[in-house]
Length: 269
Image 1 (tube, rainbow, N blue to C red):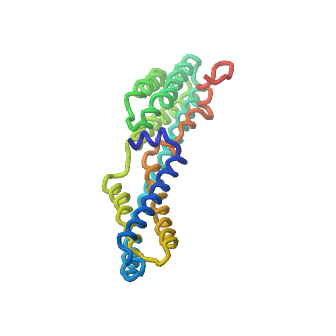
Image 2: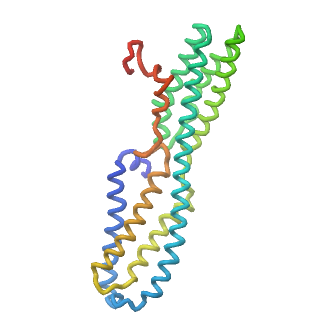
């Protein structure tokens, strides 16, 4: 359900629903609570409530900060992994230019099949939260076969051959790291702390009494908006390959890999 929302609903809509919904529920709760207990408007318990709010707010703020920083670091690491894999693939294409035409053609065919499968088959699987090693396994093996069947004939070819093999091994390693990151999500305990903390902190603001209803609602809605926006960040950053803020497959279509996405006439295919 969460993945479906990320992949089918815009971030702007999610922001309006999440932040706006949190604020609306908080305001309604505050109004109903004040009507049920009108004596709270006198602020008789404000000192105790203020201390409690401060303590819970500090603890909850630390938890949210830790969660958001962790998820942002995970997203940044995933982008680096994708860029590194695409760079290594591009370097293989450049190294293959030093090989005889038949070998170069075989390497190009295998490499083209690999990057196309990554973008067209594996990427949708990762967005759906169901990455598959098998979807690119055959294409990667074809690339290994193309290099393993070739024996360099000169010192020049030997240098580029060793470089290509090294980059291919790096591609295999980055591929595994990318698929591992596609399966990552926030542990259930941290999810419970992040979302459960909001259910504790927001109702506490109802107990902080103010004589003027408008001022109290402004206080409650401000706290709710901040919490709602923080929870939105947790939601959209949790899956690095889903949603509008997801990692893009663009690096596999750029640089030396761009020619695998165009025909002989230079028209994109």
